[in-house]
Amino acid sequence: MFKSFAFRLSAVFFLSSVLVLGGLFSFFYFKAAKLRDAAFRSYLENLTETGANLISGEEVRAVPLVRGCEKTLPGAALVKKLKNIQRVDRDISDVYVMVLDEDPGYVRFVTNADQEQTPVECGERYAIHDSPTILLGFKESYADLNAQEDRWGRWVSGFAPVQTAGGETVGILGVDIAQQTVEEIQREFFGLFLISIGACLGFSLLIGLLISFWLTRPIRKVVKGMEVVAGGNLEHKLEHFPEVEFERISGIFNRMIDSLKQMMLQLEATTRENERVQRELEIASEIQQSIFPANAPEVEGLEIEGRSVPAKEVGGDYFDFLSGPARDQVGFIIADASGKGIPGTLYMTRSRSVFKVVASEENRPGETLSRVNNYIAADAFWGKGMFITLLYLIYDKTQKKMRYANAGHYHPLWYKNRERRFEELRGGGVPLGITPGQEYREETIQLNSNDVLVLYTDGVIEARAADGEMFGVDRLKKIIEEYCSLSARELFLKIEAATRDFVNQEPPFDDLTLIVIRVK
Image 1 (tube, helix red, strand yellow):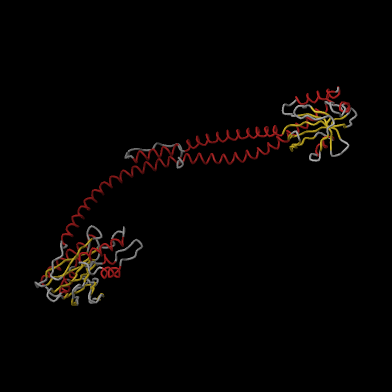
Image 2 (cartoon, rainbow, N blue to C red):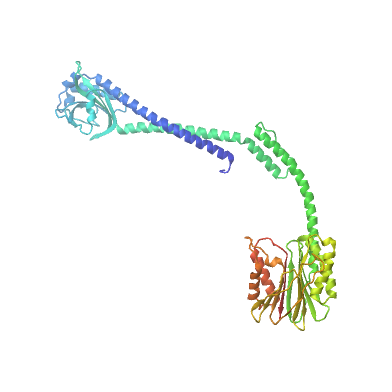
């Protein structure tokens, strides 16, 4: 619900109304409260003044200021008038008459209307030290809305002078209203304001909901149309809208549906074509894998493990084990064609055929590479910036010697177990297929027991992690050195697992081809 645009629109309208109405009602409440207090003061002053006019100064003087004066004829008559004044308003708590005392800090009660709730004695003195405003009542009508507390309770009082026929002020008429009654009036006044603002807010919420429902009606129609299309009905069209903006949306939506239908038709055709191409790539991958040796040859004195994993369905890497012209020799080849995918595969496949033919006739690795290079470089079809790096080794079983020639490929890593170090291998030449007439130098190394020779392509050392860091030769050397005592297959698996863990979920950077040779 909180994510609904209609709800948010209603909430914004309602909150705006709350802020506006809250501000207005606060302003008017305080203004009204001031007017209420002013009206109440004026009412109390007028009431007291009117009551004072009903009592003459002569009547007040006629009442003796002694206990029981209310039972005398003048006193009873005055009490009757005070009771009549009290009956004018049910909120009046008491009405009384006071006169000045000889001590300026006191006034004296003559009598009062409510002898039961606020009994006073005739002539009883009342200290005015805490409420000197009482004296203002001897000059003119005056109401004090600040509550005063005495032994009978807390009161809001009004006072007015009581005068003789000649205009002489002989006392004051006092009217008390209990502070509790005043607070009840104020609470009732505040409650009416709360009811009013609540009614206005409820009305604004209703209006907000209706307006949001009305404003979002076109949006709901658009959403409903999208849901219909999302369900697969591409024949659905949006109706016309009276609003200009939504009419444009309707037109764009309907054109989008037409385009979507065309795209779906094209996608179906493309999908069928992609499925066909994918199937052909799968077949090509199967064919390419079939040209790799299924198993390493069993060579006396050696442990051998080799495998190639293409970065795509097919790749440009190649490795093989060849039977040399002599019976006591075996050849190892690892190569990498420039480019990936189908072009590299085709280039490598054709070059492989040339190499196998030449290698079956030639016993020298360097001469083999020279002849293969002349064949490939002379073919104009391959003269389009493609080339092959290739490392060719021939192992002599009887002498445990390895003769090799390098056409621009990575040097193999030779770990001499007896000396616990890697031996740097030299020699190299231009990659095959660039230019004819190249000579490739042949090198020979003497292998000893437990030595390890690792042949690899760039898919191993250039494998990249998510941050772009490459696996590198140093990591490969560290693994070889750490696990050199394992079999060739176990060492191969350690290297493969290390590269896989290094790249994690990243796609392979290049074809990965690896041959591990371990001398027993």
